[in-house]
Length: 171
Image (cartoon, rainbow, N blue to C red; front, side):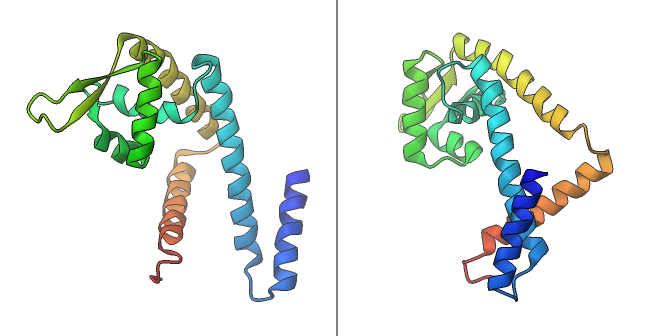
């Protein structure tokens, strides 16, 4: 209830200063920020119990590699799968390689490309991490019916598209 009061107070402050502002949209935005923070904290707690000493970002790279059929991707493919900029992919792979979770190998037919693949240690981390992550996500969704989850995903996709377009001159 404390967060609800805080969110409502913030929305009221905005609409008092900017009467044209949409009170419910402001409440939705700040609720999504709160939910995002809570989801991130829940994931960190779960990840740290399995990947002690590793940063949360490493989960995205490990997931991308683990769920790929041959558990091998180029740096560009990792970036595409994780939405991580190329320079950050290089840094993240450096850290994961240092920790023995991944290894760089030559591309089988293109000498210009270096592939990143899971090591047996990286695979064993993922064997624990991904089922735990799926369990957490499934548990978080258990409060909703299937229809509600479909609608919620549609709403979030619409919001995502709108946020992506905002400030770009497109409306």
